[in-house]
Image (cartoon, rainbow, N blue to C red; front, side):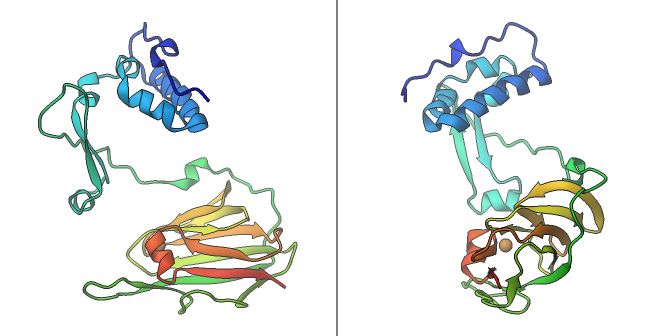
Length: 239
Ligand SMILES: [Cu+2]
């Protein structure tokens, strides 16, 4: 694989900036970057001029800025780095993104087309505060991992998972080796959103349906590593 990259040979910015054009360019670049990794990513960082030409205000992007969490308290707790472009100096800039609520259902459709579930598994998520200097413990149905032989699936059956989050954090819940269909999020019904992970909103609820079509052990867990390390996972197996 080549270790050199000439961004200017692939993007020509001869027309006025437009959102569509920008996304088109970024889409191509991100696609390439995803395909061959860091070499391209480094190329973009070193020579961002072509993309900058398509931006409404390139100086905003070619200055000194902060890459970090969108919440101030999170950035100030350490989740942020200063990005300084060549020959740019000054106080790092942070610009709040517009407030938007994530809504899975905009990707949904009216009808599922998949069979109704035959069994429902209720899952309640809770947190036991660890106290000062200690990590919290996370429970699924009142217990931490492993839940072995508690969730036993029959091959070929359709299941509904009703996930109730009784904590003040959102949790990206993931089931290994299966795909599920999101059918409800915080009381709003949807269909056709096929995923293997769903963020269950804080003090919220998500409902997913899946077919037990992958015999063997499957881990169900929160994708936040620290939550997973401290109990937030369960082992599903087949009968
Ligand atoms: Cu979590």
